[in-house]
Length: 447
Image (cartoon, rainbow, N blue to C red; front, side, top):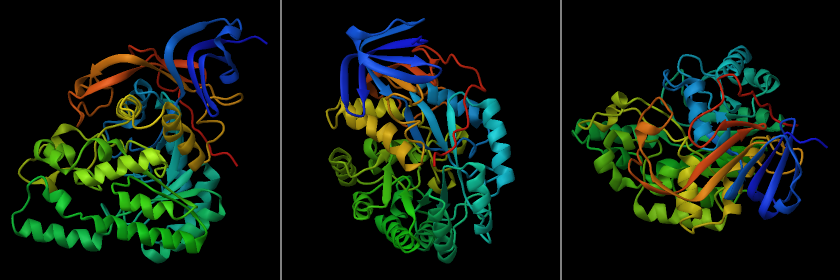
């Protein structure tokens, strides 16, 4: 057989690490994985001897259009530089949430023009009478749905009433897709925010204090019960608490993600980050961070995603009133480097566990597996090389997102992305993004 490319390195497969190994690629797919001593001839050989060769990361929580200046090109350029080969894009686009098939089709056209890495899309529903559009979104190729139990905006990011949630869960479950939720209870949060504002308590930690743990866990418990009654596969986005993970772990049909900011930052960081640390759900106390790490290492956390929300600095800079700032942080480019540095290099979990958390598990959850999420014959040749010997510091000004900042400014890092490949093409070569907008493809879920 004629091979287009062979990549050499320590290959992380679903069955273990082949070190040293070789990944042979033909027509954009993995044709074989062999010991390096048996590496076949190919038109091109990329020698990353000593580096980890991992399946390309799948970031299952990316907002490209909450802030209009980001878009597919900036977000997927950042993804490529960070070893992310597929993003699962959220449906809450400013001005055009993905609530109908026509909107979905326009978004697909846009990603096929602008994206650099591959993109799978989620759908959502309108606040009223939204369930009637679910079948059209399924037919149009969404890989799942995200619905909110907390209202950020009545049009773009509405709270869906419990009865509509139950019906939506039933329809999405019958379609064989996963339904995810933003689980926070506004009936707890909004009165607290009003009390704090009336008292002039608008200091940075007030954001954490007005979103107590019960505002998350009560909403998670309700979502789990609704999903159980509807027979739906449920995913909890951005879990910030050990209790949330414990609730989800008791349900075999439910999954949960956490995010780097809930593992690497805590509520004390609000004192210096201020608006740049405002995230929903909020940063939690140090004991919650330690508990989440234990659950990640123990296997209870299903995946780690970024919740990439790249607001410009002017939307995050109000130190006098934390409530005046936008919520969210950029993260698609730093997701895999942070989790390699803190998790693998930090000896909290193995390289195999990293591959599961960052690739195989999200691919399985959103019906992209086995095309995505693994290094094995027949899968897309999506891979990343990480040099474990490299040390460096994170700098927001060096990142690809339009945001231009990171809450991890100056953080020392261990291990660096040397190569990102999507469907057999190098999209990042260790020094810069090499693919043009339009290379990225729309990824439909597998049956």
